[in-house]
Length: 490
Image 1: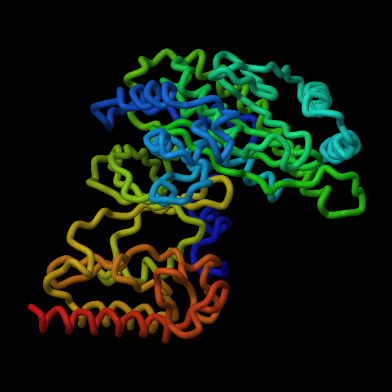
Image 2: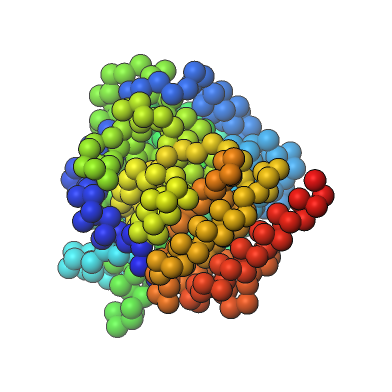
């Protein structure tokens, strides 16, 4: 998406805050995940969920099969499905869960490296070595698994073992100080085994987190998952917050021997990601092992994003204390400076200039900070406003909303998403929020994957196409007509 607002580079330059992606990563991860302030009064909830889910979880190999009583789609496991989200059965939970890359910075780095890393000669050499081996035919899964182990152990100085959970064994686990750093799930070829490889791998990670009480009390139990199906590999990331979550971090890359194909570059990037992640995960779990805080003090914030500090727009360091998750990427929090409630939003783009244009005239909450995170995410912190949404307001200040939109347009900006759920009404004033699509007219475009199923969009509003002022005016007329209709009804 093209946005003339706040880019990642702009955020870094303005806020002078550079996220560490090197050897400091594990230390930063531990500092971010170890909340020293109390925000919740019932940390036992995570433990109760883990105990209940561990009791209900069947064998991961059975759970991975869509049919049968132990399968992940079976009605008997409906309660268990509330504690696990692997994106195979879209429902309300998928729209509420925070992305894994916002819950652990090491896994966020893996996601970033799988797409953006510059492979070294070591990465390319190893990619060729693995491709040469995995392109071969193997008599069975065991032989392919053993060969894959041999390659990974020699290259990355790790030792795999077959760990047992619920009467099933993993295809290779690297466990260190009680933490599952890596888990490998192997199918001899795509389609063999009868189960969903990503579900099975995620179920093993969840089973370990449900049982690993020591590390669970101090962290979100980050695990790097490797799925190998014949000459094909993907990487996923798993965590445990107040539920077991797993997101895929890379596409399924080819391990076929094609040295002149860009497909092998994708493979080399994945191995670059693994090479960087393993030392960070090892250091992280060593830090967790040494952490002396009581379990109760550590579990208050583990269901929230790892990012808890930032440099404000005025150059002052601030620390966040999360209180409530409003959506999968929006949270209510307070600052250590005790300046009242703030809204924290995580997104991939945001127009600081458009927001400031509105807030300087009282049409948007005051902006506190925009901080950059790994994997292209931004953390936007703004004043928390009370009031009600436009749809819920008995009296809708139409003239004020029109003035806000016209001010934005006169300054050369477009908004793009002027729907009622982005407008707060406070008496006779309005606060426009969520300017993640906003930017300079003729430069800003709509994101991909717009909701064309449940929403009707203005003519010309399509995925990747320019956002135009007439689109904003289309939404404005819709909101004004709604206000008129509600006034008549009232």
